[in-house]
Each structure stands twice: as structure tokens, then as C-alpha cells.
Image (cartoon, rainbow, N blue to C red):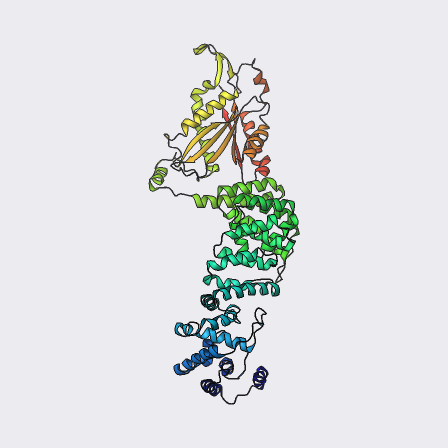
Length: 603
């Protein structure tokens, strides 16, 4: 019979007209020829001008013939489908799950779909017939309409729940073997019910599932909120001796969806099995959705770890040379993912992201220049996300009082500190002797000797603490807090006023204080201020302060006087400025600033 229709199709006969054939088929059905439904479906589906059938429709109501039929004809077609369903002897289900559908299977499916939304007709069909119709509602010839497929499965489960579940599991098995994926299950998201979940959870514990099928089902269960699937994935990794392809898929799922909770397991696998790590990252690369999930679920520090790992395994120097239109291969996808991880890190706009990039700068010195720019970008994003605009009253204060300052970064804080030291320098013109030791009193004072470096550091600390105190109001938006580290270094923190959340960035400047007699006066800017304080403690602004005591009143018997460099005050200033702006600039790059300040304490 099917060969007869195929022959008619090849003949492309235009006589009699399609409308007449449809009417003839309907009359025969109404006269008792139930099997005429299959012929009717064919005539409804062909091209109305050429008579050719290129593909079966997903719904008869989408055909031109249906849309141009009057209401009475449409009602007759619906009634024909009901009679066919009630009286047709359904063929066995050998076709089920094979991906190939005969004319009869298509005709049965189209009949079910036509009447599925008519509650009166649905309820008029006995449950035993619905049980026989279940395979046509689970393995649908047409898969392009998610909503309709879901509605059919829901109806199948309503009328014959055990049969629907059985055929669902059977279709999973056949698709797993035939296609090695279970994409169809995504169509059932909106009609899923908890009674099916346990069966599917048992299915993904099965060793028979192919990697792609395992992934499809796990992601489906994640999508519908089944939390138990996480433990199953962990169990697969830790307890089963998985083949490499399945292990790659399983670890990929863990990295995409639960990376933070299981980072130690993931990172241990990456460190001990770098080839597995490469396969996992390659599995993620190229899928925009998976890349986004993977990066969104990682903390800043772990993004930094992933970038460092990918930089080592997929070095930029070995990236493919791309020119013009081309097929994107896996290595290019991995390079793109590596770069995207760093971009995501910089775009986080958090202090933790800045810390992670700073760690990368130390870990990857050969990439320092580009990472410095990324750090600047990250810092800008952090400031943008945490910035709180000045209130109108503070803006008025800044405009009215020129000595007031608004501080939002370390460089601005350093500038305010230097301004404060300039005020200290002016104050020292009349009170410098407080930083000297001497014998006698009044006009008989003699044997002037500089106080030690610790006393000098104490004096500088007291001045800055008082000069930049809240009561003085020099900084309108922050409170300055000073801490003493070792004997001569001063750490200045500026904390945003009124912010108790802990999220506001604390600005920090460190000052290293030396007396002019110190034998490291010309080297300690680098060896102590930069290497010891700034570099080790991730402080990006430093001030190298020298107390200059050289003068005739300095007691010649003080051995420290002879240790002072044989240069003038101006020569010392130039020497230190040169170190800060030239010698250390390459080390600091664009992420750090060092300034020098020579405090003239001569009598």
C-alpha cells in the first residue's frame, strides 16, 4: 500500500485537484473506510500546487489545506482522526526509538496531535487505547515544537503513567546507543514530574550511558532543580574507575556547575592529571553557555589559578596564527577561553580580583606588562562599583576651602601625605630643635646631635596623625589611621568615613624613615621600602623619607656626622628622585608609586 502512494507521488499528477482528493478521502472514511485516514493525511500534507510531499507536517493544522478548509470540513477531519484512533489496528512498536518513521506512524502521530487538545474527544477514548498510543506520544516523529511534545507526553503520562515511564526509559536507552546523546529530554522540562525523577536518577548511575548521554541527563536534572545529581557526579568521579572520555565529561560538569564546593577535588585532579585537565578545558571551550557558567561559578582566586594553569599548558606564544575566514579549531578555542578567564577576572570589580591579578603578576613575570594593564582595569572596575559620590555639602566644602582634599586612591593619599610633610617642613623652621639632642640649656646649648631614627619616625608619625586628623578635616571622606611596623616604618591607612560594611577599600601608604647618616641611605629605597615593605605586603604606594641634619652645629665628635654622604641637600634630593622615577620605575610598572622626601632638619 505504501509503495502505491509513493508511486503516485512520483507521478506528480495534478488531476484530480487536491481539494477534490481530500473530499473523496473524507467521504470514504465516513462510509466506513477507517484506513482512509492515512490517505487523507497524505493529501492534506502535499504541496497544493505540485502535489508533491517533501516532508510530513508536525501538525495538520499547519498545512495549507487545513487553513483553507471551511469549519465544517475541519470538523469532519477531526472526527476522521478520532474514528481512526478508535478503530485502527495499531502496528507493533518495532519502529520505536530507531529514528525512522513510516507513513503509518506519522499518520497515527498526526491523528493524536490533532485531537490531543480537545478534552471531550480525549475523554471519549478508552484508557486501553491510550496505552497503545503512548509510544507515538513519547517518540514523536516531529521534534520541532517543544510545547506540543511536552503536552503529548503529559497526556500520555496522565492516561497511562507506567507505560509512559517505561517508553521514556526505553527511548533513553535507544537514543543512548544510536546517537550517544539524549537531547530529546529537554523538551520534557515543562511537563516533568517528581515520579519520573527517581527512575532517571537510577538511569544515570548506569554504566551503560555514553558520556554525552550522561551529560545531557545531568544537565536536564540540574535545570529542573534536582539537587541529588551533584552527589551522583561526585560519586562517579571518586568511586568509579571511569574511562577517560566519561571522566572528562564528569569533571567538566563538576567544574561548570559546582566548582567552588569541590575545588580541592578539581584542582587535585588538574595538578595530578594535566592531560585530563586539558581535555576538560577543551570540553568547555567553544560553548559560550558553558564558558559563562564555568567562569561565573569560580571565585576570583580560582579564576587566577585556572588562568595560570592555562597559560602554562596553552602558552600565548603557541597560539595559532589566525588570518581571514577559517574554521575555529580546538586550540584556538582554548586560547580564547584562556583570555576570557583573565577578562572575566578583571571585570569582576572586586578587591579579591585585584589580589588575584597581583598574584599572577608575581607568578608570571614574563607577562608582567599585560597583567599590569589588567590590574589597572580591575582596579578601575572596583572603584567604579564601590564609588560613592560626594554629598553636596562636601562638594561645597572642597570648593570653599582649598586645603581640603577628596581621596579615592593611594596616589591621592600619597599626595596628601607629602603636602602634610611640606607643612611639617615649614613648622620645623621654628621648632626644629625638638628633633635634636644637646647639652646645656637656653643660650648655652651645645654639642648638638640628631636624635635617633626611631625618634625621627615618632616625630613624623605624630605630625601626620595630628595634621590629618578628622578634627582638622583635611581629608573630607576618610579617616587616617597610622600604624608603626618595625622601628622606622610608618603605615598610613585611610578608611572611608561611615562605612562599616567592610567592603570599602582601605587605602595604604607606607613610609620608610632614615637619618642622613644611615649607611643604606642610597640603597634602602629599593632594598627595604620596595622589596621588604611594598612588594611583600602588596602595598603600591611608598614614601622614602630622609631626615637631613647636616650643618655646622652638628657636633663633630658624633661619628654619625662622618657617615653622612658627601653631597649637598639638593644633590641628595636629585639622587633619590632619580631612583624613584627611573631605577625603580621598571620594577613598579604602572601599578606602584614611590616618592622621596628629604626633610631639612639642619640648624
